[in-house]
Amino acid sequence: MGNFSEIKTRNDFADFLRIPRNKLTHILYVKNGESMNIKRGMFTKEYLWRTIVTLCGLFVIVLTLGIGGFLVYKGSGTFLKFNHSIGEFLFSPDWAPIDNMEGGGSVGTLIFIVGSLSTCGLALLIATPFALGSAIFMTEIAPKFGEKFYRPVIQIFAGIPSVVYGWVGLTVLVPFIRDIFHRQVGHSILAAGLVLAIMIFPTITSVAADAIRAVPKDYRMGAYGMGSTRWQTIYKIVLPASASGIFSGIILGLARASGEALAVAMVIGQTTALPESIFSTTKSLTTEITAQMGNAMEGGETKTALWTLALLLFLISLLFIFLIHILSRKKPEDAGAKAVSKKSALTSAKQD
Image (cartoon, rainbow, N blue to C red; front, side, top):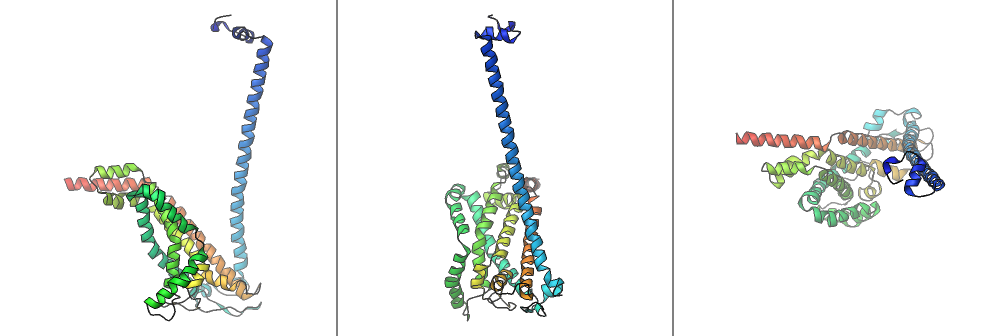
C-alpha cells in the first residue's frame, strides 16, 4: 500500500509502514501502557504535593490558633483568677505583683506600654526617612549599583544578631550620649530608639524598594512624556503608586521593633518609671518579660501578669498584620493611574 489516504484499518497502517502486523500491535500496546503509566505518575505526584502543601498550611493555621489560645488561657488569669481589671492593667503605672498564689499586688503596665511606644515611635521617626531615601536610590537613581552592591549591604544589616546591636549600643552609643548631652547615664529611650532604628532600617528599605520597583514603567514614561522631571515623577507618580507597599514595610519594621527585647534591654536602663523625656530610663513590654519570666513562680500573680503582657504583644502583632492586609488590598496600578490622571489634568489646565 503506497497511498496514505487508503489506510482504513490497523493492518493497512502496518502495511503502509512495511512492518509485521503483530509487531505494530506490540508497539501500540507498549506505547499506550507507557502513556498510562506517565499519566498515573503525574497524577500521583500532583495529588501528593497538593496534599503536603495543604497539610503544611493547615499546620500553620492550627499552630497560630494554638499559640493564641494558649496565651489567652495563661494571660486571662490576671483578670479571672486574681480579679484585676482591664483598666488597671492598661492604664495604671503601678507595677508591683506579688509572687505567690494568693496575689493582692498591682499589675499596671502603663510604664511598659509608654516605654514600648516611645522607643518604637522614635525608631520609626529616625529609620523611615533613611529607609525611604535608600529605597529610592536603589530603584530610581542608581538601579544597577543598588542591585549589585547596595542591596547586599542592606541584607548584611538584616543578618546581624540583635545581641551585636545591643553590645555596640552599650559600649559605643551609651557613652557617646552620656558625654555629648552631659547626662549622668547614657542609658535612655534615645539609645534604645537609635539601636532599634538601625535594626528595622533593612526591613523597611527592602519592602519599600520592592514596592517602588513594582510600579509599572508606563507610569514613569507617561510622566516624562508630559514634561515631568525625574524628581517630579518620583514624588508625584512613583511614591503615590507604591504608598501601600511602603506603609506595609513601615508596619513590618514597627512589628520588628515592638518584639525586640535583648538589644533594647541592654541600652534602655531597665528602670520601672514613666519616662519624662527621650533621655529617661524606663522599661518596655518585652524587656520586662525577659527580665522576670525566669524567676517568677509558676501559677503566681507575677508570672500570670507576665503571660498577660505576652498576650498583649500577641494582640499588637495581630493588629499589625491586619493593617498590612488592609494596605495590601490597594493595588499600585490604581494609585499610579490616579496620579498620572491628576498630573495630566494639571498639565492641561496650565496649557489652557
